[in-house]
Length: 129
Ligand code: HEM
Image (spheres, rainbow, N blue to C red):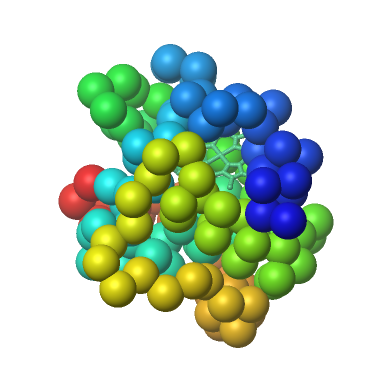
């Protein structure tokens, strides 16, 4: 399940409760909903999991400048969709009205873009989070 995959691949940094560690690993609890609320935020979440992220970001008033690892080699399309569907509603996140679950097909489409962590950072800047 998405929850089990989160526990296996993400919780070591973002923590079992999704709160992250201030200054080191950003929270996903209460934050994934902020990303999903932005135009293109839905695709950005796929991109950051597939290709990683490098660059200074601010989440809930805290600054982070670490390296989010890329998972394109380890995780299949259906696994990434499952993790993102868990995060969209898990940890108290409330997705936007009309939110439809992620599908493996849309992960496959993003995978074909072969982005870098730096390019994902540029796309994050464009979201105006
Ligand atoms: C950032 C999800 C695993 C470290 C992020 C962001 C998301 C995310 C959505 C972007 C937040 C934003 O742009 O506001 C996930 C998921 C994981 C995972 C779903 C499992 C598949 C990990 C692991 C680590 C990690 C294992 C540590 C080795 C980080 C760091 C950032 C980050 C440091 C911020 C990067 C920066 O400062 O530019 N993660 N993450 N993540 N993640 Fe993860």
